[in-house]
Amino acid sequence: MEIQIHPTEMSQGENGSDEEALQRLTSTIVQKIGEGAQKTESFFSSACIYRVSEELRKLKESAYTPRLIAIGPLHREDKHLQTPFQHVKMSYTNHLLSQLTTGIDDLESAEKTKFTEVQECLAELKTLVGDAKKCYAEEVTLDEEIMLVDGCFILELFYGYRTETVIMEAKSMLSSFIS
Image (cartoon, rainbow, N blue to C red):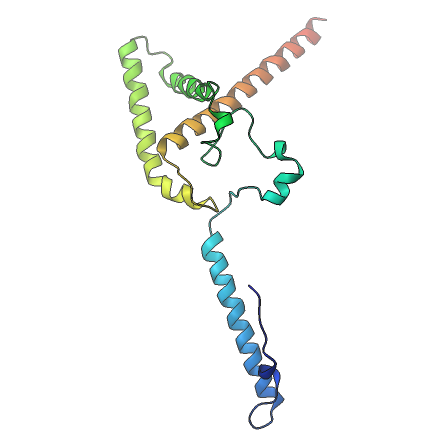
């Protein structure tokens, strides 16, 4: 917000008082600062996810463009991401949900447990969609499915990485112990 100061606001007051002119000028500027801050806060109050600006993107576009998979709503519709690799998210989500049914031998009971868990998650996510949308600095299409699938995908990706790292460390420790 540009603050415009009119020369007449700093000129002497009606009775010639520089003090009164300074008071009016100060009041005007403080009011404009407050209004600008309020507008900014209302727009960005809860936004913490922004699209990279075009100027920054031009420096190295590949650094700011997803190549394999979209997480969240911003790049979901990008044509170059509409590949079978998107199904990997569903596979990871299924694997994570299957962990909930470990030890349940009856396939029907396992599927019912998985269904119930997904239903409970979706019910909870439904209450959070509005708040999640406020995290974006622009209008986005976001729903419970995106939040569930992308969230489970990220968790399973981290779990898989951690498990793989633990296995590699254990093998390393074992081989050094045996040597």
